[in-house]
Image 1 (cartoon, rainbow, N blue to C red):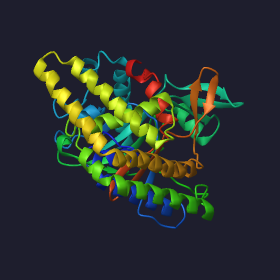
Image 2 (cartoon, rainbow, N blue to C red; image 1 turned 90 degrees about the vertical axis):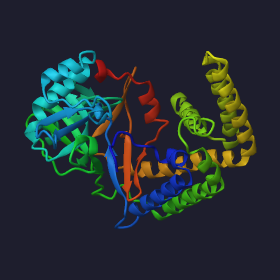
Image 3 (cartoon, helix red, strand yellow; image 1 turned 90 degrees about the horizontal axis):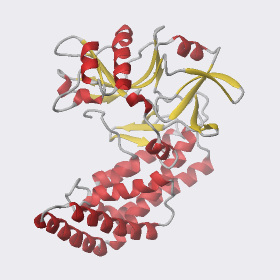
Image 4 (cartoon, rainbow, N blue to C red; image 1 turned 45 degrees about the vertical axis):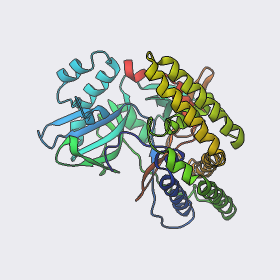
Length: 398
């Protein structure tokens, strides 16, 4: 695996990778089902913490110096690798929140004795923690991004959070002879907390077997996966044609994902494949109309007029495979959410969404499924992703 700069949702893999993405998604779902019913499985699960920003840190293999940074450490041009506080102040003067976090990381993370280079998600500073009464219980809370985490005071974890200057969860390790040439692997060596740094674990552990599926649940789950596999079989040729990114195939790949994300942003469930298929055709028309209107030259306009005409004809010629593409999306989401509902039974820390009326209990952000075929996100997107789309990112500006 290359740099862990972006993880895809399981259902999006069919649009990104075509038929191969569909086969990978089905294989992953079947392995996840085995994991929740059998003693062993070839898939691993990590809990996806809702931290921000992403932090990359460790020893630069070329200079031998400790560094910190965000994902911009891996920029192809102008990588932002921070070795000193003066560097951070100069580079992030317009982002005081990020500047503060990186300076704290540079101060406290070297004490962890990190071997090599790791990536994690930042959780809190001393200033971003607070003590609140939630559900009649006194808790230390922190909200790094969208989800508010609550740890009861007077517990071992509560004491750790209370004393710590910063909190972080690591999930990815890197190997390579330079930062520009590193490969990522999910999982990190055990890194212990110190009095200044609370290190949380991303490992998913179901010690009480709370997530295990019963026989009837497994029967329903297998039926859902079979349904997804059947619709993908009908859509595979179409998916292979649109998998090119950007403007490759009438901008179809990019605009289909935008269209499906619009349901998430508005909190609308996708319940009718036929209506959704027709909705995408209208969405495609309107987005290409906008693209045409934005062009200043006739040649620029003509390019997108032709793309729109050819794209609409392509969709009309592939009406049935488009229907099965939408159905595959729906079926994969249905099977995925059955898995998530089981995984959510295991909770090590309380999670809430902050609302106008107080705190609403919510599930963790989601999980990451890791197998030989790669890693995919398992997130209930209508719940978490919609909140994430609309949440203010306070950490950016402090």
